[in-house]
Figure 1 (spheres, one colour):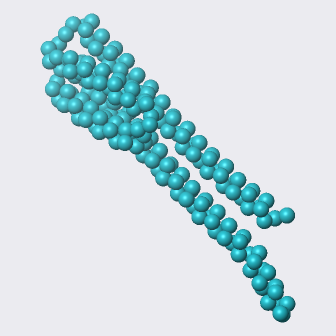
Figure 2: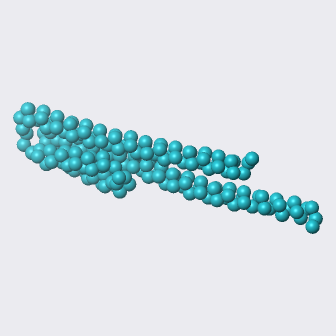
Figure 3: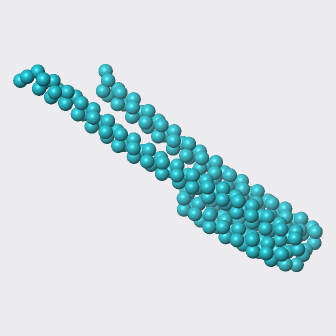
Length: 184
């Protein structure tokens, strides 16, 4: 047998397993990166929905306060109803994206309190003390809901950061394993 044939066959015996392991590792890393990309996109969508919740909540609060302060105009109540509808739609979408977060249920319960308060507002002006109490209640419900929305956003960002750290650690470990396995 010629030396060139022996060299080529021994090279193939050494290079083939390395190439197989590297391509397998590359495929595995690709799947992990794709999974993280999907997770990060889901997190971004959830954060966008949560921010839209905040905007819808503020629209509701402004409409309710306008209703109370500006002669109980029905147009303000219609604005509130539209903002409430947007809020609930976004909350439902967020629940589909992040059903594992308990904050969503708390937000829904707190929002129900705001809705009950809004239903209790009448077209006839009430006393100044009642007006103050209604405005304080609106502010309190709003602050409570905002707190949980911000908590949800923070948890989403933390989860995204942890996922990214896991991928980085996995990639580093895969490289270390390859180097240890094939280099003396």
